[in-house]
Length: 308
Image (cartoon, rainbow, N blue to C red; front, top):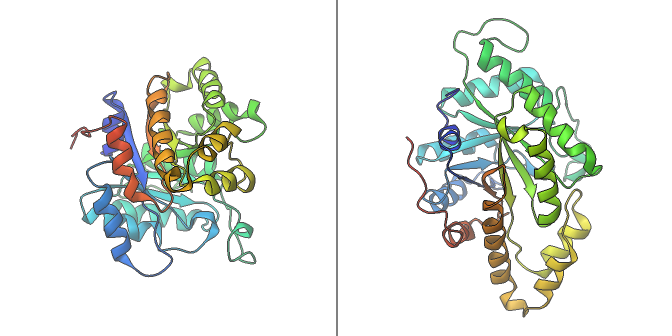
């Protein structure tokens, strides 16, 4: 084992991993994180904490991860390059590891113009691939990114995101290969609604042998209703929502569309279980965390393995 990460232990054991997200609040409310953590605790292996997602200010990922850790949950620290230079990135990693946080997700981050502080200065000292390289160097060589030796090097299990649906499609596997070469251990994908296109991407991943070098967790997001599906199809960049998803939700009464969205998510997991190269699921419920237990249970992913 490279690290003490619970996620690494589950993935290396060959069992399907289940992760989810606990989105931090837009105010100093630790109870919001605790409530989400208690809700998810028995149903997922690890819990991501987003880092100012969509460039909107929230409680920081590190503080939220510490709260989850206190509840006995294995947190995944999300870190964007948008807001930090390499000094701050390394300082935050040292601080996280000092609190027993040993799993992280390296992200470039949405541009600040998408959020509610469009005139904020960005940093982007590193991009996600460079951040992966740096964290891998810290773990494997015990040195800072600048080359100086560390007294105690944090052994982080390193994750990154991948979007199989962004254009140009032909280059998506090449970008994944760059992250693998940089030293990433696991990948959490963009929300999957177009299973046929995802299957093509996974086939290309397997053809390149990347499924043998990195663990891929398929991204699952339940639709709350027709309005959400239309918004994600038309307004969210990099999202691929086929017409059949829209039509299926349109075909049920409005008060039953949320239930239909849950059923669709469960069906997706059942199909993805059979797909070569899929090693687990990352359920992004987007402020609907209370539905994650139902999805996990109905998808036959309980009980979760005990590896600690």
